[in-house]
Image (cartoon, rainbow, N blue to C red; front, side, top):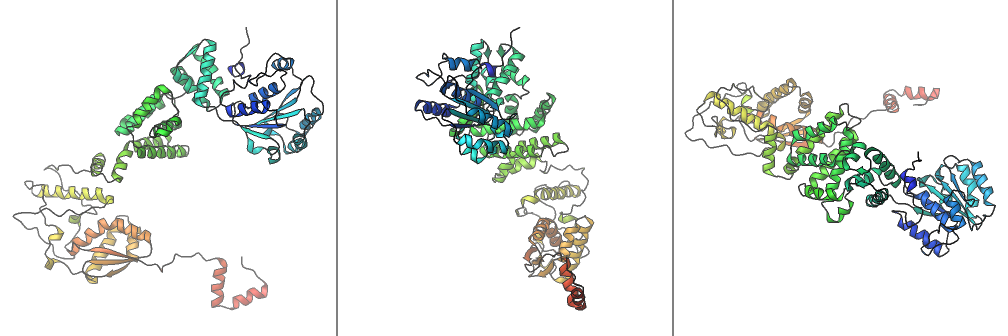
Length: 597
């Protein structure tokens, strides 16, 4: 049985021309050889699998070639080239610094440098993973690396340049290798497939190159694995099945559900992903990558950053036209936050599902924030906050904390009985803060239900009870301290009974001052207390207006800037305070030589 050679070794570049994705380095090296300006030490840096060691071997072979071609390539016919191709060259040494990193190994190398090459022009030392050398080994190597013999050349390779001593870096010509682009990797795979007599779908090769993450060696290893799985015909389905990759179709459907605000469809899609054995975090990463590609399609100068096969690029372009830039940026932010918090969640599936639901409502929230009135109505309908037509058999709903009609009024002032009016005018529309939309709608619904229960034949377009603003001035209760305090204390008791003790304490500690017949000034100690009171205004103001028969009552706030937060005293502060009251303590401390801790 013939020995199998992996593609990474079988198709390893042997000339500068066959190296892919590193033209900026190969051209520089060829020009240095042509102009006879070779440095004595080179340092090749870059990620794994991009051709550092390969270029080092090609450089060593080329500069020792006895008949260099006009294109500055090795001839492969002289004795030096043949010895190199057979791994029998006595003038080219390869040292793995990962396993030979001691100072004794470097001393042995330095001893070999003293001997001249045999049958070649240069003696070349290739040290791979040079960052693994110990500090002592680096120091033993410094002098030789700085002033080697004229026939000695050193080529160092590393994936972690930051671990190399600055004294080593300053003695070398540093070359930074780039990651292999997806397009370059696909072209190389197509050449190999043509030589092997195979067939492959472009989407399959693109997926392999994308999975390799810029490393050509990884791409060839994945290619061998796919060939063992699918044979001579490589399809996109074979690749995604073997590499455990989600199909692009899932992400296209997910974005469409997000655009259509289809929450059930999005949750069913996620359930299908989990049923196929994929990890939820894998789905999040792929979804974020898909949205990133859509965002790249929004700008003409970023199309080149789109990491997708040409056959799928058109679909990305079409779907990007359906999404706004604001939607995609906010969606990416949500997915990124979900991915960061995924491992800390005790219920990961629910955590992801909640994020997907937010994605479906994201466009509505953006529209509401932009001030679109239609979007506000749609959001109210989606959340079930819109009032429904009441039925005649409805029972009166229980009183709510914010409903004006539910507050007791017979203890403070006599009730104003409802009066019949021949023609009723609708109440003037008062702007309602966004935070109180739900409560206001609920109050309205409760009033309509009570109205229908009392008089089923009444029209729903108008109210059957007079509004507070329509109360005659002579029926109002004068806003004084004696009239306000009883109602104010009743409201504080009500807050305590409803479990809002912190808000009740704020009201008790606040200073109350009546500025005029409709303005009550509250003196608070912080901006936080003011914000809490402002949130409660939708409840406290209707209560006061109803009981005092004054629809113009409002609050004015005053923040007491002189109030300072409590300070935690140290042991020294407490001792000084005690010593001021009793000076004997200080004399006692000095007599015994005590120190305060």
